[in-house]
Length: 347
Image 1 (cartoon, rainbow, N blue to C red):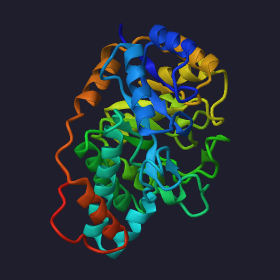
Image 2: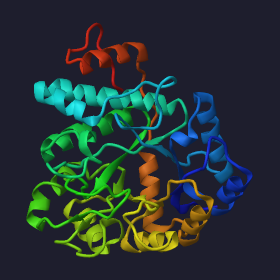
Image 3: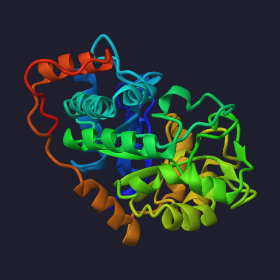
């Protein structure tokens, strides 16, 4: 059975009978996990395996937001705590080589955590460029305040994940950094002119346009589309994301249950797909909402199926790494020191 063009959540740490029936019938392309789905490594690995069994695809993507800092769904006591993206930016300012090495190694270690559980997609790096006075929803998640620095560190993070057998998801395209509202709660409206956006917000994404997957921003850019946020704007998807930025990979929405979007869940999903998004993301695990999204999400075919196939083909087996030595080296890097001892491989 062909996969349907949406990614779903689940309510808890196991798959209920009703959820299992839904997964078999609706055949979502992927699953995204949150803290509500996480207890122990064995439990998460079982949940991931049972999801794939339910949809009948051994390679079905399983996603998680594991950035570090405020946004990490796996944490102590079973998994390490990782620093926020701004930490890498601060190291980069002191020593660019150290900052890049720390960003790549941190992502490589996160990938090792995820790969051990069967999770094969991480929703990072961010290429958002925060502006002074913007809503703090991005804040210290960002790698810096200039497009070049953000893109450079984001590339190191993406490379670290790929080295570890995990696909990166570039977010939040075409930029959430200057939004003055948190799109989880309200619809951000950006009134900045197109030329400035091209030189700042969009510029951070262009060097990363070759990454396999990206996630949209629920943000209105009035200079381009005065009404619709990027997620549901055909103009922004075509003119900005696909053309000006040049991203040709699989484009997924940010969570369509967020309050930035209006209309029913079915209407939101339909609007995003009609605008040119390839896959709809629905996160909260509410089965009734999941069914509404599924009803609007057709089987993946044509260009969408080809993009999905290309994205998954970017997965590779992780290279060998001495995790104990790598974690010690990473601790040194975060402390602002060059790693000691033997060289630590990143792939």
